[in-house]
Image 1 (cartoon, one colour):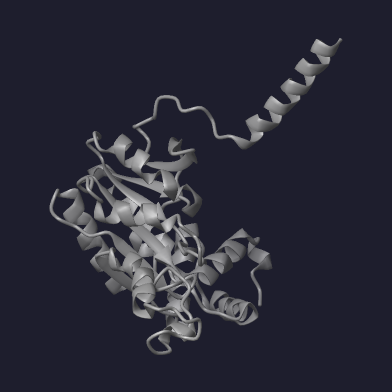
Image 2 (cartoon, one colour):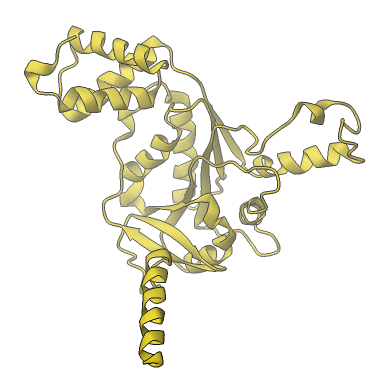
Length: 287
């Protein structure tokens, strides 16, 4: 009886663990175009994504100069020439993440692959790089909405990946990261308060330099700015075209009302409006 009770309890525990732990690592499907990396201790699992969210670059509005610089860097990378890791920062909803996703649509047939890595999984990046080093494809490790709080040590694994540490940097891997924070870490007024600041930091300048050192390891910085009304309406027009829906005066008025209710004009707001408008029946598209 005691054994049966113990086995029943052990089975229950294993079932609950099965819901929490990632799947056991099998053979990676290298035919996929996009992947998600998940840590298991200091190693991890590379999970293929059969239907990645991607679209043509011309669907994006108001990011022309950023797009050209990112394309040039990516084309250098694909051609086997020197290229930089990229940090995209700035206003929310302005196309930072979308630009990276659109690169996959543009360059997948030239060997580009995209790997999404969450901040919590950065600690196992060395294991991922070891896995990718022998592959012929070119991989962009995509860290979306990246930022670190005070006391967060996971950024150190990313620093090593960006500069290679003692080992050489993988020639077939670049890191593209997006963030609303220019330097990825919180900055405080007292850090600009003279030699020691109000907390009595003996080497205040060195403490600030440590914070800036992570963003400095990205060779290419791209800044994104809030949309004006024309930028927003152009984004609406692009996304409605993607849905095969006409952009007319009624749609324009509805889009402006949508932005007013949301309290902002951005590429994300334009996409959300387009989803709403395209999803309506024709007779429901009224202002």
